[in-house]
Length: 333
Length: 257
Image (tube, rainbow over all chains, first blue to last red):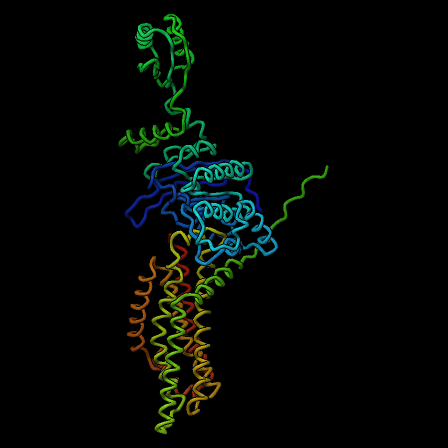
């Protein structure tokens, strides 16, 4: 299989815009770059443009403006050679009637132009891997959601692709199947580049190392998942203390007077603390700890909140909404 | 320690996707109830007509020339067939829109190959059915009725009527690529065929329109035809088929699926 040139990203969208029939702007000016080995989690609410973006990348849709480049070449509906290197799972995979996993996989492998001596052994290997060997001759129509998902996975791997694009792969799966799917993604991420779209932020958090957030067709974040988590709601802490209530209340009053503290509140024995955006957390927290120490309070625990992907995502979308007309200007990275 | 062997380079077969789509579509058409209905209706009509004409000859001693009976049958077949063949062709691509098309067109196949595979799959199935039914009708007529049909004439008549059907199939597949729903594609095909009928009426008599072909068929069946006539019909029908395929492919490759 041909390699990607070192400088070429696996996927690159340049000002990608999709307007359907001059009525609906599904995707607006999306510029995204995905390097080799990345596992990109595509986040966004329903109708945010996730599936549209994936369909543009795979060449099922044509951009209204801008371009989608895959392996350094423009993707078009006729880019069969590029799609040979991509494994795709649509949101709700559907299968032709009357086919069995063996006939279906054989058909799919033929669609990739794989010769018989390659596709037959690979078919058997994949059916075994997704635990469908026993059901190889059963009609797909009778399959459960989990079995269909496993077959879709096998189909997306039949061409041994370099890039995997999976649109909501855990959708409709029971917890056991979902766990297997996430483990599979983790395994595949060691040797392939992946784009995984999901509503389940926990899934994204677990398997992805990069994230792209879409809101109303606009890309509002793209970069390492870690950065997304740390840049959002940073300097937001919960401190559990032990001591008499009066001392806790006194300590809270003192903490509120500290220069970098934006907000401090008390609920039972838990102090919720939010520092200024530009505050140096270590020195501010040192002052807080000193105050607790002065009040003879015991520090039971401290937790940085807002570091979870879900919090970060919601905060990002909320901030984007609040920007109002200033959205005209691009947000600084 | 021996190093891992280099992974073998896969040599892709560039036209295998086309063959796969054509093969799958051919089988799908043969299994469809519309196709089976078409074959059944034509076969039953032929049996009914031959039995009636044979009865007339047997009981009333009226001579029933095979060429006349077949031309009656072919006229009926052409009109009836166009309706069902139109439905079969119009469902070629439109019926697979949505998730199913996703799972096919997201693989290593170009839109052009997909279109060609679909077009040729439908064309092959319809032509095969037409040739088979035509051969049975002509053979039956030669045995049951007054034989004034030659083998060459019968083959030429089947080929000429088949050429007309091929145009209908090609236009149907083109409409199927342009419309998202099979019903809309079939309706558009009918509008196009009616419009074409009006245009054909204004064309000079030398142009082999469907009506011209139907008028010539009784003579063709008796063997009264020339090679040039066949070539002319083939050229016009082939031209129309290729033109519709080019337009269909061009527009389909620009459509969102």
